[in-house]
Amino acid sequence: MIKKSFLIAMFLCFNGNVLLHAQKKYSQKQIAKLKSELTTTIEGQKKQAQVMVDKIFSFAELGFQEVESSKYITGILAKNGFDIEHSISGIPTAWFAKWSNGAGPVIALGSDVDCIPKASQYPGVAYHKPIVDGAPGHGEGHNSGIPLNILSALAVKELMEKENIGGTLIIWPGIAEELVAAKAWYVRDGLFDNIDMCIFTHVSNNLSVSYGPTRGTGLISVEYSFEGEAAHSAGSPWRGRSALDAAELMNIAWNYKREHLHPLKRSHSIFTDAGDQPNVVPSKAAIWFYFRDVKYEGIMDMYALANDMAKGAALMTGTTMTSKVLGTAWPRHYNKVIAETMYENIKEVGLPTWSEADQILAKAVQTEVASDKIEGLPTELSPLGLPVEEPISGGSDDIGDISWKVPTVTMRFPSNIPGLQGHHWSNAIAMATPIAHKGVVVGAKAEAMTILDFLLKPDLLSGAWDYFNNVQSKETTYKPMITEDDLPPIYLNTDKQGQFRPLLEPYYYDETRYDSYLEQLGVKYPTLKE
Image (spheres, rainbow, N blue to C red):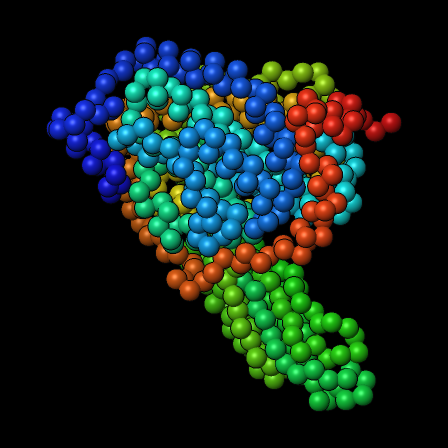
């Protein structure tokens, strides 16, 4: 059903009981003129885009540790009139920023913030050169999405005030997306109950949007912990019950199971606790799995199988076992009406004009990582992404949970280089350079124009909910993979970030002293391998 907030607003509008912003009708010509104003405003804020992108890049914070990033972002939003709710869903670095101009659609804009372990990298340098060796870095490019949303939202906000357009804008962060450990909690806790639609943004190498089921998987992230009895490994090993044996046996059992998994499934694991030292039989051990499938039912089947294996491993070793869900992501399904509306705006905006230096850097990085194609940055738009006819396995994103709560799309914007492997230091190279800055600006224009369409054309939002209710949800019902008792694992990455934060702090971008982060780091753009 259409969201209650939107129905109430439309009821009041059409009954004329109060003077509402939405009463004013705009012609296509008038809307085109307003869109032109939006793009002009955003073009004038290119410097702000560069500063925000560079600043968040320099913080390089892992999931649940996005302290400086969140403080910086919410400071900007508060200064621009947004009300901030901090520590949502019990996550200290999570927040919702809200600004309202009266009755009208409630539109949420989201993007991720966290970075990747061991991906520290000098931007603009076309080979591996860590800023701090072993430190986290933005090898996914999550430093760019929230700046894009801020840029578009502030331009739309200014226009709403000027034209007296009703509606509400909400900006929110994808905290710990690399751990898929926040968005399902947002949904569970009702944060999207009164939101009419969501535009999510994610860094890519083209300006694009899709609808329907998309390529990739959903997942459940689970840690299995075993507890046994310590003993001297040489003096009296028979008195010990090794928790590590249990974790290893579970790992072996699951690896044998891999042979019999459908090709669309994915699973991978790491040991999070493997004992303390060799001469002590480990009394505690733990192994952390991601179980992925293209369907919810497939994910839960894998989870049930893994639970049985964990119980079996505990029985074989005389240990006890507990498990904990650390994150979930539903398979994604994007809204057709929002996507088609957005793609028209994408065609109007087009790709950035890349400089010779941009293309030289891109081709040099592609060469460095042995990409299949050494073609540089794209010069033609991707087509509108259509529903996948046959499921294709791949990565996951917990925006999937939100896509099953409200009509949602993910707009991908061109701030990175094609042909890289992802989750890698090479993906950080472009992310504080003119490539990232230009991609954010064009993405902000397309997003702002789309927001305006949904503020001024009520039929679009009705159509989006019609697709959500009668097509997307016709045969699929969203069932959360977490329970009311599951807590977000906010302790994750505490030690890693604590180790590297003091080493990274001297490299935080100081926009009051340097025009760009490249200048602060002394990087000649581009820097190529001799």
